[in-house]
Length: 150
Figure 1 (cartoon, rainbow, N blue to C red):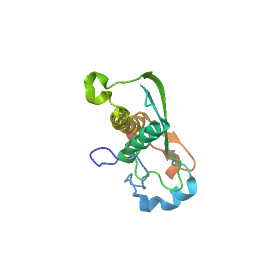
Figure 2 (tube, one colour; figure 1 turned 120 degrees about the vertical axis):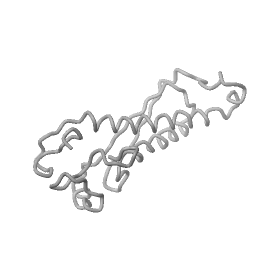
Figure 3 (cartoon, rainbow, N blue to C red; figure 1 turned 30 degrees about the vertical axis):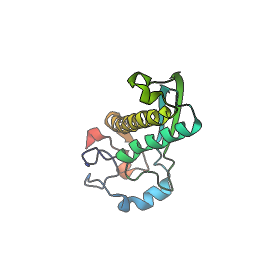
Figure 4 (cartoon, rainbow, N blue to C red; figure 1 turned 90 degrees about the horizontal axis):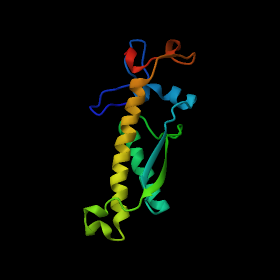
């Protein structure tokens, strides 16, 4: 996991607690199949079409890209699911006639998508900060340390 300032928040470490780069963990990553991040994004905005929801999911993956390295490799299952309660039909109409055009959902998707990407990124950081060290036989020295133990 990579923080906004580029420092490493969590990840594979060597015996000196130094983080390993992706190239040093290729064998583990390709053989373990334990590097999947599943994200669910919910909104109350009605985005009108399936294509807009697909665009929202695509934009939300940028939060994973900002926080995880490597991400979306051929051996993991990193993905984002989205849903909406569709309670709010035209959230940007209060900003003027420009948003009352038939094209308003495209800008709405941009606004919701960028917000979702930031929320995804922050949720990944939050998960790292709240994680606890666990015992795991397949891990280096039998433990998966949390960020609290760095």
